[in-house]
Length: 612
Image 1 (cartoon, rainbow, N blue to C red):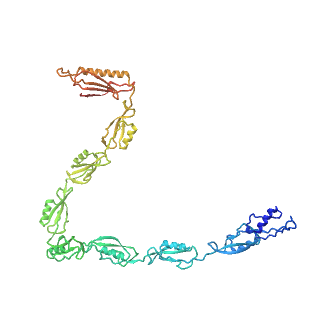
Image 2: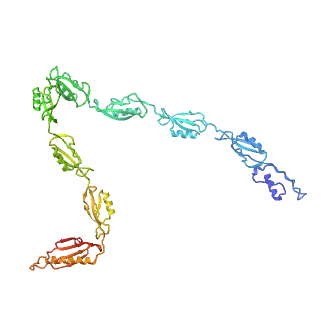
Image 3: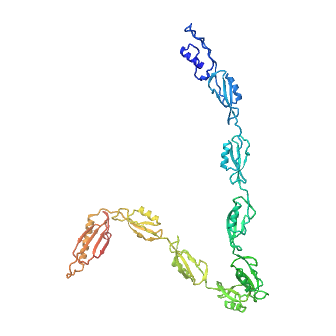
């Protein structure tokens, strides 16, 4: 048993006879290691205690963690303690600093004891592993496991596969401290020389590019000599270098060009046959005055040896007959001018008329111009003066009838009139042909187009209030035009009639006129009596003027007279014996509010007559 623990137990048993009693508070059992000299119990002297023991000196263990081990001994010495065993540990902390200690800081221990410490030392530098040829993910994992970090420094041409590590720095096998950054370069394929593809088919060119780790790019076509479908040009050119995987664009020949044969010196017939054998045809055959034999080819276009599309024409010039100088016929009348041209074996051809103050029929200009040398038989175009041209008036904005009158006044005729959807006013002219300002022959037909506004359907408004009707009309681009309210059996404020009627198609912006109910007032007794009296008087008058019944015929069912008072229907049926051919009469009476002054004409809304 530990001596300190024995002393403490004696203190408890003897009730403090041993003084001072050591305290265990703040100390571990291992810290109480000083030997205690206890008085031996003398059996001959019972009750006599052993001599008192002197308490050992106590020190508080200082905190050495994080301090250099070279300072630890001095720090412990100031506390009356000594430096014990020093153990080195691999750590990322500063080398030579105390990592931990035993006993721990703050404990009370006997002076002179030693404190054991653990001191940091740098771990041995790891060897740099080789990651060349690895993928970037594999390289990063390998370096991290070795305590290193990876940084991508760029790309480098290499025989390694695309994207693999081509080079690293530091080189593999070297020693580097922990967390050292290792730079790596990703491999890219070295450039490849572009092969010559001209003259090959597209399929063969693509295969050859794949063998060189290149690929076929854009393809286009252009005219070329046969055969069709061969590469006639490539971009980049053969011999240039491209990165692996680069694209080479090619131009493929259509094979539709032929070489133009020589025609000069031959006859027209020989030239035609030469062109047909080459897959061409004669173009313009032009006669040209020359000292050469008549009919000999003097020149050609395109020239000999050039490339031309198969089937295209080749122009050539033949040594022609006598050339004629074109005379001036400007200022002469058309008949005289054409006669002069025919005398020189030329032909005059009227090409048109032009408005001019000169006399009608006078030649204003000619083509070819005077003095030109042309072959015999050449046609000379003539333009003669005309006084019948008029300017087309501007019809924009006019209504159709007004536009036709304007054309007649200008000496023109209204042609076809069509409609065209337009925001312009309905029926106004929005386009014309010929356009305004053009001078044309008198009597020319002028077509024009008039605006046709888009129509909308009038919705049903009867039974709606003013606000709802206004909203519904506004949604269709129409306007509401209410009339003053009038007494009616419909609820107050409700629409009882509309114009135009429901379903009518009208232009946008049209006003819809509505009648509004002012509701019913109490019916006056005198008005009701007067109405019935007037009704009965009218029926009596009609009864007296009815045709006499034919007594020889069998009696027929008697008609009925129905009197409707007010709205809604208030009926007072009454049956009278009269001629069965007489009409069934209904008189509709308007009901008004009390104290309202109205005339008899205002009370009767309508009279309905119908045959039985």
